Image (tube, rainbow, N blue to C red):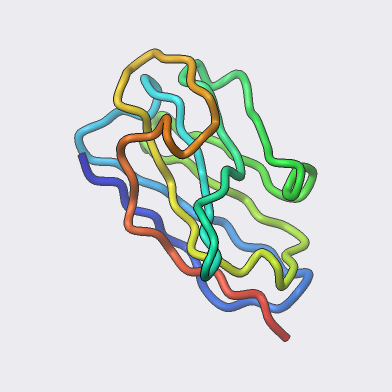
Length: 125
């Protein structure tokens, strides 16, 4: 299984970015998918998750209302739309899948088995 996160970069506070996560060897429509981020010196933190059914989304309080997770089954891609970015959003962003299909998961890094390589988002003026 290979997950490829992309779309990171340098932006100014208040800007928007959309991250993409593609997968080989897995079909997103069969798995819960989540985005996490890791800032220097910190653990990976959950940001957003979408159930395998695609009809429920969950967000961390820190990004609720600013970030949105979505999935395009035709492209087998999951997105993270990030709006109103803040300097504290600076981190490496990861997409992740659990090992089991059709599973309900806790939105905790320990529940996820497959990880992309991460894409760096830097928010700075």
